[in-house]
Length: 174
Image 1: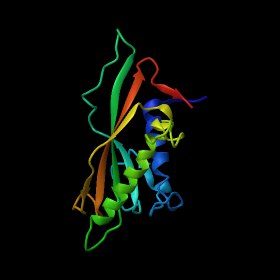
Image 2 (image 1 turned 30 degrees about the vertical axis):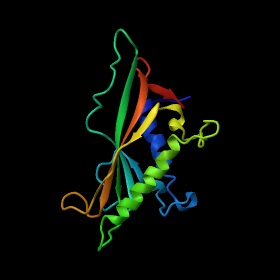
Image 3 (image 1 turned 60 degrees about the vertical axis):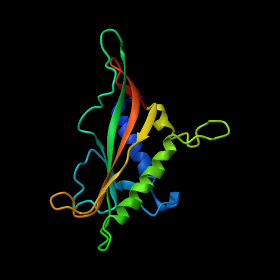
C-alpha cells in the first residue's frame, strides 16, 4: 500500500468527483480532464469550461492545534473551486452561474444519505471516502471577464471540509 498525504488525497478525490460533471451523469458539460488541482491561472491553454481546486491562501483560524499534549488536530481545509466558462456576449456571467450550480449539485453527493435509513447514497463519494468529517459550501462569487484577470466569465466557490489529522501520521494508505 502506498502512503499519500491525507490533504493531497482530499484534493485528488474532490477532483475525481468533479470530473464526473459529464453528460453521462446528467450535466450539460464534459469536464473530465478539465478539472485541475492547484492551478491559479486557467489561461489560453485550457479550453472552457474548466475547474481548478485551490487551497485558500490562509489556514482557517478555527482549528485546534496538535502538539505535545495531544497528537490529533481538528481543523478545516478551506478550498476555492474556480471555474471558467465560454463567453456569452450579451450576458457574460450566465454560463458561470450554470456551471457553478452543476458544481454545487455534484458536491452534494459527499453528504447525500437515504432519508429512510441514513445510509450514504453514494458510498464512493460519501465524506470523500471517509477522509473528511464535514463539508460546508459557501456562497459563490460570479464575475464577468476582467482585464488582467480572465478573458472569460468565472466563479469562485468556497468549500470548507473538516479534517481530523494526526501530527504523527499525516498520511493515508491507499
